[in-house]
Length: 85
Image (tube, rainbow, N blue to C red; front, top):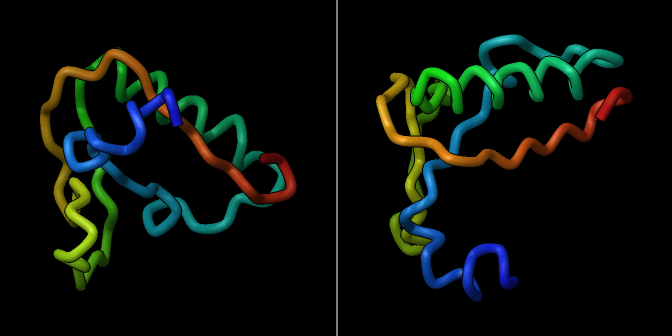
């Protein structure tokens, strides 16, 4: 919880998912997500979540639907739960 200061800043953290872009990569999902994270930090670009159709406004999260956006990125958290994750 200390990572996001008890989640009070959760709405300020850009969220995205690249799985809709690349599909399920099985054994390379972990390294590919690490590469996406490194490129996002290096280029200050939040990758889009393609085919994102509906937001739950009650959660107050900062989604990145369908289009990449520029944002200063100092760190990234990559969650890869495939066989290589």
